[in-house]
Amino acid sequence: MTTAHWPAPFSALPLDATVRIPASKSLTNRYLVLAAIAEGESRLRAPLQSRDSDLMIGALRALGAGILEVPGNGDVPDLVVTPIPADFSAPDSGILVDCGLAGTVMRFVPPLAALVSGAVRFSGDPAALVRPMAPIVVALEGLGVRVDDGEDGFLPFTVHGTGAVHGGHVQVDAGGSSQFISAILLVASRFSQGLHLEHIGESVPSVDHISMTVEILRSLGVSVDDSTPNHWFVKPASIAGFDVELEQDLSNAGPFLAAALATRGTVRIPNWPANTTQVGDKWREILPQFGATVTLENGVLTVTGGAQIRGVDISDTSELAPSTAAICALASTPSRLRGISHLRGHETDRLAALVAEINALGGDAVETEDGLIITPTPLRAGVFHSYHDHRMATAGAIIGLAVPGVEVENIGTTAKTMPGFPAMWADMVAQTAEPSAGTGSTAAVEAGV
Ligand SMILES: O=C(O)C1=C[C@@H](OP(=O)(O)O)[C@@H](O)[C@H](O)C1
Ligand SMILES: C=C(OP(=O)(O)O)C(=O)O
Image (cartoon, rainbow, N blue to C red; front, side, top):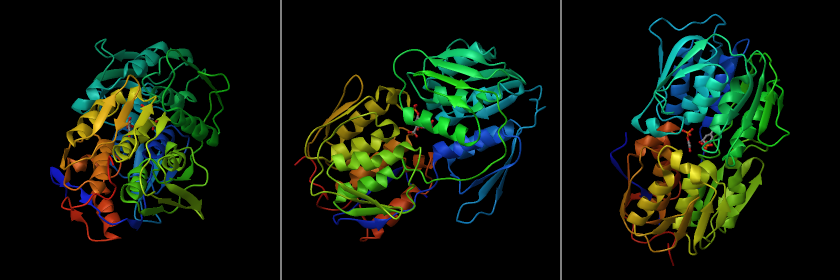
């Protein structure tokens, strides 16, 4: 149960905690799409259970896939997926897919809808209707698929599939999101002539997520040639049913690892993968720049905060940026985050939201063309708004650990990728001491000193 304003637990003591994180959103939703177009039954072990994965499951079921929960080895049921039947057609009334605010649903499912017959309409939360979508529409139209989008390039729109996509050469400007590339690549092995996808425009952000897509496709036997920058070639192929165990979400590990820095304590995360395609593995490079000690031994990632948080100057933090910005707000020297202009098209305009919320607590954050400059100042109690953005909500929680009296508005929005967040956070704090929600008297890190 969450309240409208969640008193963020404050910790005057250095934390000493071990935390287990639920499965990766990006991996779960990719494997779900691929299971829906595979030739046989697939099993996803220990998948993510969250709003974004529920939305993906709902979308794929609507498109004819069978998805059943079966008992797994841990707390979370496995998913057994029966692929979309080859002759699946939408009813005459069409199909409605609710994308919520999930980028992976609104970008990954329309190309899949192009492979079935009939009209599939996509809509979502009010905030989803302003997220960039035009490159998906343009790419589908370039592949010969009819899309009714009212010519505005935003949700809602309707994809009119004919049961097959010819494929071939298509150009897309993916400067606004790597998901435009991943979306087309994921289903391209089903195009009868395969795909030559070409990115035109400014550089693509979040390239690690494209590498994740390419690596997963290759692991399932799909040939992807990405040897020429900005070009991807996919050969037609059948994907056999597969059985995969999902890794925990290393991006969502970020707020918990940041808690070690915010309190000068130690946080351990077991089962950290030795090899991974997740961008969250970059915490191992990012956190030492703030002065933290990071070790990975026997699969346990251990982060210990330094006496003070040093400011950083880093690029391309992708979906790690909100947590990174929260750490910067607690640092003792200025920070600059670069290469994240596309965050303006995320769940909210994250650059504007971070500036507004850090400054509302007395901070000094300014927007640049491609990121943020955050200069230390002492922070004070106040409300940190989440803008329906799970990563804004967790950014507020990080700051609240070190600044007494922070309340996060709509902490429940963390259900997008981590429904258990408030309980997990409280448990992390309780492993060291009883949390005194928002009522502590000394900041754990002397923000701005
Ligand atoms: O493909 C994916 O799973 C994602 C790609 C990235 O999107 P952008 O390229 O829009 O940043 C990332 O930020 C998002 O959280 C997940
Ligand atoms: C940008 C994000 O999500 P989405 O998949 O909705 O794009 C994110 O989780 O940080």
